[in-house]
Amino acid sequence: MRRWDRWSGWLFALPYLILFSAFLLLPLVYGLGLSLFRWELLSSLPPRFVGAGNYQEALHSEYFWRALWATLRFVLLAVPLTVGLALLIALGIHTISPRRRAFYRAAYFLPTMITIKSQLTQPRTSEAT
Image 1 (tube, rainbow, N blue to C red):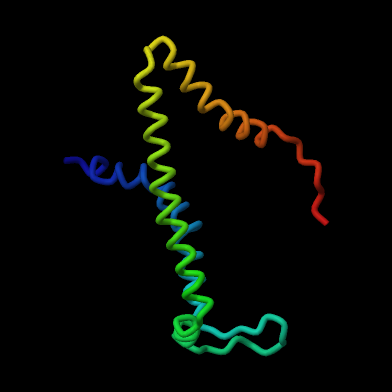
Image 2 (cartoon, rainbow, N blue to C red; image 1 turned 90 degrees about the vertical axis):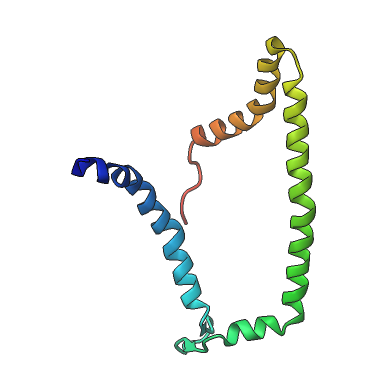
């Protein structure tokens, strides 16, 4: 196996890996680092290292547990219903005759494409203030 063959896959994956690191991994690590500090944003005092104190405070807070429960309820209801509805629509379109299937696929997906296209071609009217 030539040297190029061994490294070519990594070279093709390199743009993805760079963007993944820049927009996901670095902000994640930075946010985790910030979560270890107590930082009063409205005061001139410097941030104070508290370690896991912020996490202990959250785990003992009633608001945290209420928010976690609300999030879990939403996920447990929304995900199965959304996936189930999408599967039903896909099954319904699949059972239609092949001649009309293309029309229904386009009719289903066209609003998404029009929205994306209109946002991409919309002129920038607001100026930064």
